[in-house]
Length: 141
Image (cartoon, rainbow, N blue to C red):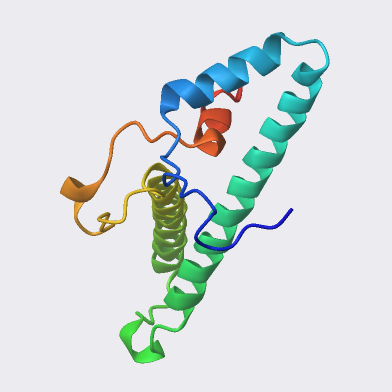
């Protein structure tokens, strides 16, 4: 049976899932003997996926840093300055990882927030409600 465009009833737009709805889905699935393993596998896949996304963002930030013109970098060859440079690289690597994590988690929390501006914290939503985020929060680290 086929409907013309006028006969198809209009459906209301889908509303984003709340955090409570997502957590209820996970809780019910975790209690089911058949679904518990699947939810664990899905949780693991989500964690791996987010980890890979964070790694990609981190690599992109590192590549951007490598493109800093050589003239802007310091050129001291002493042992002390090499040690200091090593500490500085470690510090920058940690900052890149933290920035990548903040960017990915911020994007997840605000995936249904069209007014979100990553440069303006006042536009962020607290307590995002995606199922992916609920799975990540339920992971044991």
